[in-house]
Length: 117
Image (cartoon, rainbow, N blue to C red; front, side):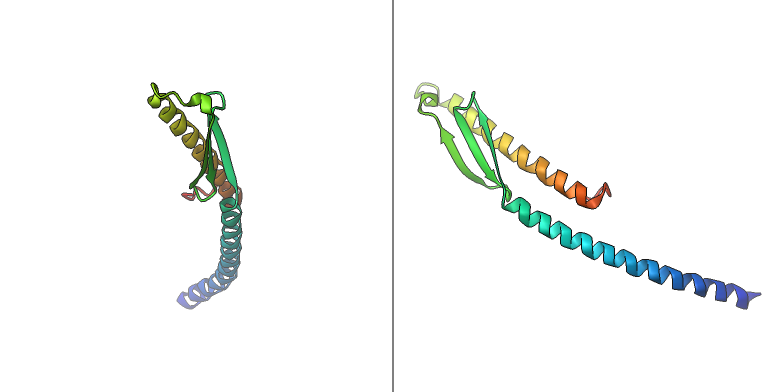
């Protein structure tokens, strides 16, 4: 009886090997797709504004600040803090957009596997 049991396990191992190879191929394809998506995201830019558009910020897909535009009417020497707040708000909103887009793209690829991207 022990010999029959061992043969049965060997047969299951053969099927498991085929499934494992398929899983490895799927993981490799997912990795390639994720690299491609990451490259596409890095080429994008995200813009946001604050203060009704008097301050705008542009962030790259690499999450680097690449531009700031300030309308001259937003520059009040007596209220520099307001201008600083508007810049921070615009940059943070642009970063949020970049993060949301990256998370959305990665979740499409991972199919909700719960990977930390």
